[in-house]
Length: 234
Image (cartoon, rainbow, N blue to C red; front, side, top):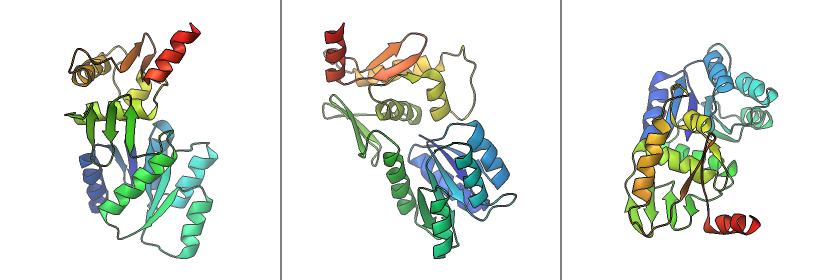
């Protein structure tokens, strides 16, 4: 999952960034409102952590412009201003949550998982497909009860596919959510990671494949019931 942190206090921004990266998120940081708005407008994020007191353009104005532009990315407001009227204003402008400073990282992480669940078709912390389970709290993956060791990128790709289970996820969408930087459209980096992921998920030759390649489009992960239903319709 790719997260944008808009925070002008560099120590706070680094604290959040390092904590989220340890939780296997891909994190971008902007240190002022103008830059944060530009990044949110030009990139796809799964959630935005937005400070209120920002130089250039405050968090309320950034949020208002995002919502006016039709961008519905979940937003959590972060602020030392704990007055009720500020919380009400942020929520009325379209914020999904509001966390006053100082806060513990554990609470921030839990609230982030909560707003991500609300925006996902999967409303649980355990994402499942057939006998595969991805625990988004412990960040561990299991298939048939066996733990599967994943790198940060492999985990991010698998989470992206599971959150869009039974739907095709385009290559560009995977790039946006898993990598910070742009790659040449002809690059085979996604194919390389998908191959590694398949090898780990199909550690036993008797296990059915989970990830399907859609030529020229992208990938999807499917439940057995979905596969059987499609076969019946053919």
